Amino acid sequence: MNSTSLGGLTISAVERETGLSKDVLRVWERRYGFPAPLRTAAGERLYPEEQLAKLKLVRRLMDAGMRPGRILSMSFESLNGLVRGSDSEVSADSALDGALALLKAHRGAELRSAFHHAILHDGLFRFLTDMATPLAIRVGNAWMRGDIRIFEEHLFTEQLTATLRAAMPQDSGTGRPPRVLLTTLPGEQHGLGLLMAEATLRLEGAQSISLGPQTPVGDIAAACLANRSDVVALSFSANFPQNQLTGAVGMLRAALPAETALWCGGAGVVHARRIPDGVARMTGLQEIRNEVAAWRAARTERGAQQ
Ligand code: B12
Image (cartoon, rainbow, N blue to C red; front, side):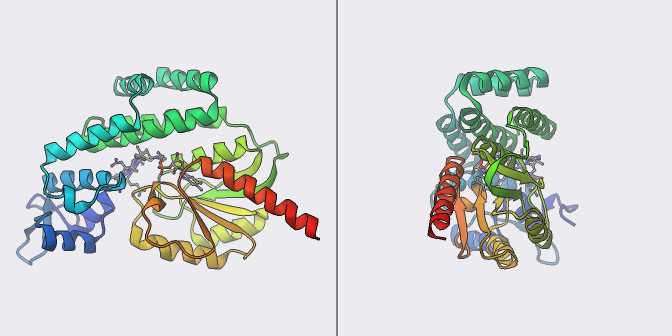
């Protein structure tokens, strides 16, 4: 049971909602006095909704590089102000304001046409880096503050997904190596980062095949063999539990042939404490371009040596 008759959330529910582990929540409580959960008659922690809302802001600001010791004592309003500030750092841009306004007004078709217009004007790669990425971050922040509802976030995802699928170069079977298999691990539902990575690979002329989100480790290894993939690329959002990341990626690394590269990208790997050996940590889309070029150069060199 996650939410109780006393009107609070269990520690497991808070862990799931915020991506902050139970250990972290208990340590902060001891060290900083926040969160300060109530207790059930049985002594279990119960977190009121307001504390959950503040923890979401704290998590968001930590993702942006702030230290918990600095921000945990701040009020909800001050934290909200900081998040708004980081919004404008991400994107002081009228095109993004316009897109967000269209989303809030539920004008989905117009939002899509604004996306198409931006792609025609700037090209697909710049659209990905200058519009799709900062807009996704703003949509996430607006959702977290309660400024947009979950169905509006779904509308955004659908419009962006449809746009990217239509705009990315199609797989004509004539792409050049590397052959890249894309997916996320079970539990990672966020698929937009994956799609943006796929679009970038296609722009580089690479052969990319996406399985979409949530493929079990054993099936990723089987798909890699079936497709004779040179690279497996995984995407992790900030929501992916950090305490599972190293183990799950390590298991996949062990299940893949040694010559298959394993690339991990997305906000979820930026702050990961440890990435197993033989795994590349990549945070942005530009790194895909660099890695593809490096992979091709290494291949040419191998060919010259044989
Ligand atoms: C859309 C969205 C959803 C949709 C996803 C639909 C879909 N089909 O994808 C839905 C509504 C389902 C959803 C659900 C949830 N979400 Co959500 N979601 C988002 C949102 C707005 C966009 C996600 C996204 O695709 N981002 C894409 C880009 C921007 O993310 P990126 O990881 O930084 O990746 C970039 C690069 O690193 C690179 N990249 C990505 N992958 C790869 C891979 C490789 C190999 C390489 C090289 C590069 C690369 O490309 C990207 C573009 O530059 C984000 C906001 C945000 N800040 O991302 C929240 C967000 C990720 N969600 C969040 C939360 C809390 C949730 C839920 C727990 C909510 C709930 N209570 O149910 C669930 C959890 C679902 C799960 N189990 O995974 C939080 C996570 C907070 C945290 N730090 O833990 C966020 C950050 C919102 C927020 N600000 O609070 N979500």
